[in-house]
Length: 211
Image 1 (cartoon, one colour):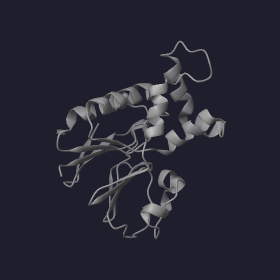
Image 2 (cartoon, one colour):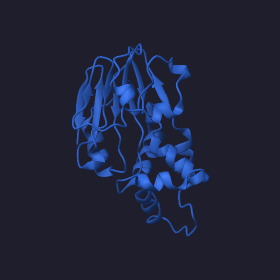
Image 3 (cartoon, rainbow, N blue to C red):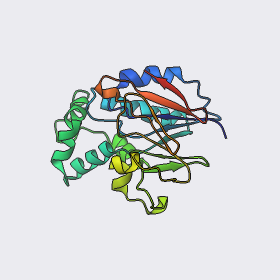
Image 4 (cartoon, rainbow, N blue to C red):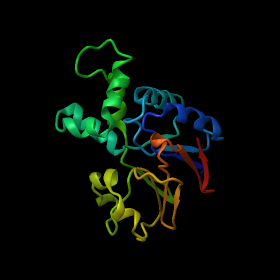
């Protein structure tokens, strides 16, 4: 198996995603590229980020796209089950990015290809040495019994735990100034949308790239 490159929370920051992708020397025939979720909200270019990722997956088969809590909130917003959580957590910027490129005057300017993209996102990805998940895992619970809510929203209970999950957990969701590297986990959300860096980790070397 080749190397794995995992990218942290993008949050509509296309201006950081594009140069970051230009920095990593990935070989798509051998290596795997994992995106950890939270592609949308808060930043200015959510639609453009999703366009970029859809185009990338059409050209390359070795791309894994995980679901973040912000994609979950968007789905709840679109289904009408929670209209306010999404908008209160940066969703207005997402809708603005769709409306500015749309002639659609209705309530949902998001194209069907993008809705399919959000529906296709995975909760986790497992290799022989790593578990990739957006927010983390609940300690003492087998992976197959983890709840979606915890995998997308958990913070302190996971981050402060020294529980051995059997494999190193690569996660985003909780922003750090620098990547968090512990024996049982690596956190790669470095707060791109808050004026800090967008980060990618190369595994197994644990080499970091950032913009």
